[in-house]
Image 1 (spheres, one colour):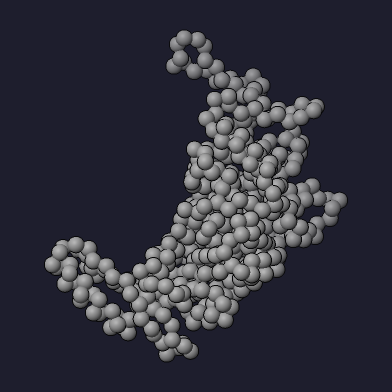
Image 2 (tube, rainbow, N blue to C red):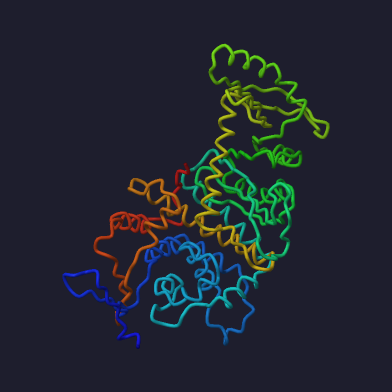
Length: 450
């Protein structure tokens, strides 16, 4: 049975004969990538990144240039094809060909072996250069709004490894073999300002200063009057980071682990709250602060604490900071750091950024940077959805509603036509997004990261 005559007959429908065939032409399920390609070209991020990658291949024997390979991987990640293996079938997809700059009826895109060679050809220095482009995404957004305050949330996250990737190490805390990437998010936009792949057995603060140094330098140069605040959990609370922030004129507010000295200083608060809880039966809370100088510190620093008593028992949390203000105002500001967990969730679960399955460590570091570029593009796209029915949508919702669009691609001698369904419910949203992209300059809008 040949493909042109293959038919599927269904008997459940009794009004007429029901037959399906395979004569629909070139069909894609990812027509929404066209808008993201338009956005990427308007911003120029991918072309700029590809120019930083060297190519030692013989041009006479090269079919896919560096930009094509980079865009194929980036838009594949956005569409949910996180593994290079996926491209053995997606390389024939007409929409993916279009967004990678190819004729939809022309030669296929790169296969898995070609993409794997591409990922392994990038050196560590190029990965660092690519990573430093991320802060330029953030700077462009803040310049557009003339921001006076920039909050950087720095957070590590576990990345389980199930193969024999280089520098995969066992973490006793997470009880697994893993990588331990360090991520820096801009709170206002949700954009990634920096990423660093690390071995799985390092301390949470490992290389934190080295990651922040170029980010802070770029922000100071571009926005010299902006106030920069560093927030992180207790895993980053080390004297090296305190000194870095103080020497560079940065404000910081970091969670810090409890110890006996802290418990002694706050014992009165727990006793008082426990008495009130016994009298009223209602949840009790107190936020206060004190000065403290640890033996390894060269100076006295401010400690904030939150004491709670409820039916489940007592709860004490501590924060170290150099910020001014009432503890009752500063501690909720620190708790807002939890928004970074939402960003990490979208990066890892929606984009599958923990799929670092190359053998070489540097290749996996390159993959992490590509995930970061994909994430930032989607964050900017998220900002273009303001005042639509999809405002505030998650990345997974954006993908399912605005990327996964079925369409027929038809090429004529004059143009390429992409036919979407007449009844598609988000056509007005896509039309509005395209008009906003058309009016967009090099600086992206500043989306509200909630």
